[in-house]
Image (cartoon, rainbow, N blue to C red; front, top):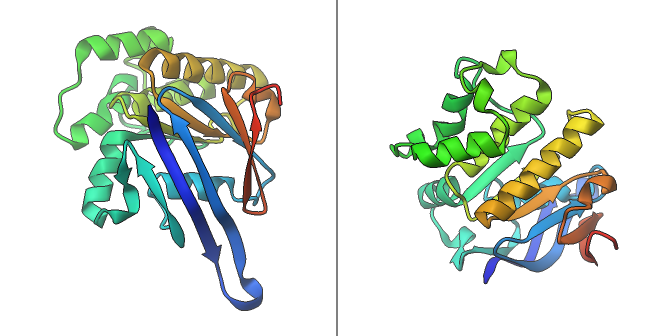
Length: 227
């Protein structure tokens, strides 16, 4: 089942000599449960692509459909609610709330919608992410890899249809990076969520079903992880 569809997505920054085409008529689609990785040099347009797909940034032209819903046809408030309930974000910076413990940080998105956490699902996720014995710890008491696992749990707790990860291992050492990748892949498979991840490290695309490249705003599919 098609979960994400992007049609002729374009984005331009600046005017005149300062004009930059960050995205040039990008079109592709992803099925439910697929894991995709986007590679490319810094400044190639990778983050812009993710931000437009997630509705964090307005595209200049084109369309983004998530579960058949046109993201840019929604009003601002409607899009905010839709994004919160249907899209999970994982960033290079963990953005954890320092005063909240692991469990509280993970369940925070649910509280924004006045929803009670499903205790069984929370316990399962703490187990999958290897955080059961850290549930009462504050972010400052965790390693970088553990903090990123909390951020992954927070992104997955609402059971979003689409997970967007922007350089999720950028601040981690190589072992923690691979651990986080393995966890993200296993979690996506376990919960049948579509994941689109940006990375500059081709070694971290080994688990991906499909690999894409952005070069100067141009988007192309490289194929599977071995491409």
